[in-house]
Image (cartoon, rainbow, N blue to C red):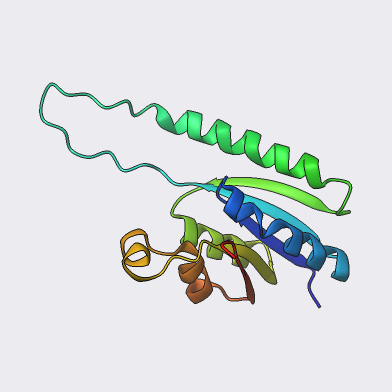
Length: 145
């Protein structure tokens, strides 16, 4: 039924709670599994004259994301026959949804941090936006039991 499973990760232990579910789906269907980390480009506020901001942060974020994904792929290599890791830049939800369309993903498995109320309003929900944008099924794993 599924040939390509996508598991977006943000580097948190909460997001990693979706991994066993993604692995199980990939194994059950003999599907390819892709782990994706999206590096969100930090917004640099306009600063008063004479105050500088270190905008060289992006290369470090990219390298951290690459190392993180490589570590996750290495840890799962023996469990999934076809496993890939990807790092992309952009807004998380939109990048995940676009990646799924562009790469023929037919299932997205990701954790939801379980925020509600004002916290959800303030921080938004990447999982909620992916659910609304995705053109394929999305399996949401509640990270907070």
